[in-house]
Image (spheres, rainbow, N blue to C red):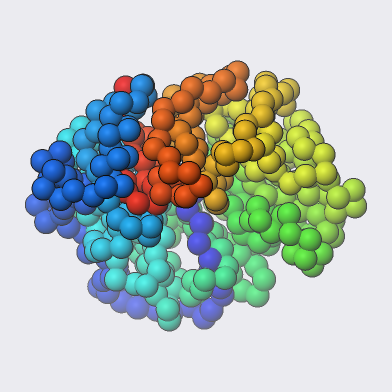
Length: 432
């Protein structure tokens, strides 16, 4: 998992290690609570929209199973849900900022409170990482045990203050160490590797990594850095200001040395859709400023183009890498491409009316049910998408005409649970 926020360069700020992570408080299970109500609690606290959602989901087919918890609110996207090896993570507008709920019982395992106005998060199966974003200093990085929430280490990152207009990214490594892409001097970026044992700095280097939008594992001890945000790639004003220069850099994770660089001409650039470390392939959206064409391109670990296609001539498109396939959405046209050779697996249309997806939907938010199926939150149903054929099966959501009451804006899937967060309530069900 790769977490993105913004950062800007500043003078390094030194503090004693004793103050490291003082804004981060980890709470035990006994001191944590879940916002989700069980059936008895819901009966004592009726909520029309929440209860309608619960009743509809209770009658849905697999993969939707029995309802185990729900909470209601009023058009404020109050609950944020995410998935982890341990279970469902939930953030609410109340403190603490994050609570890990057990995949079997839905009971709290631990929670964490972060007292800075902004913060960033990342996780592996073993660690949960908090990056504080104080207004006047560089972030602290605090690594917690993902099972218990106990603090494993903390380090002062250094290198500059993180502001709301620049990029910041993290990537867990095999030894549970962390690589961090953040602000460097001038227009350059700074990449740091931290030890998984104690958070100490293994190496640090400065480089030109385009807009610094992405940092990810490309396998065989390498890290891919660079690219720009997707919305900027399809913004004519943004691309008009793009000068010729580096778009991507591949680094050796052991020492930070450069394996290769990839450049793009003025007015052209790439957005990294994702990487497959086992295959050693990165997928990018590539905008060609001269032909005004958006391409989907696969790049191997040696920096060579493996294949390239134009999914939607003359149109921008959304894309996501999922289990050896690249999903593409261009308006009502959906398609999938094989990661290995780029051949199109299928193409299908979805309805234009009623609106098929909630406002702001992005393919990168789609969770996998297994290696061949993904779960899509539509405006009228939860759709199980067969990645190999493009076929969809539906599990109904309640509807209320053209209103957005029950539109899902987040889905989270674990081994045992599925969480659905809508505009007026969030529900957790057993996964069948």
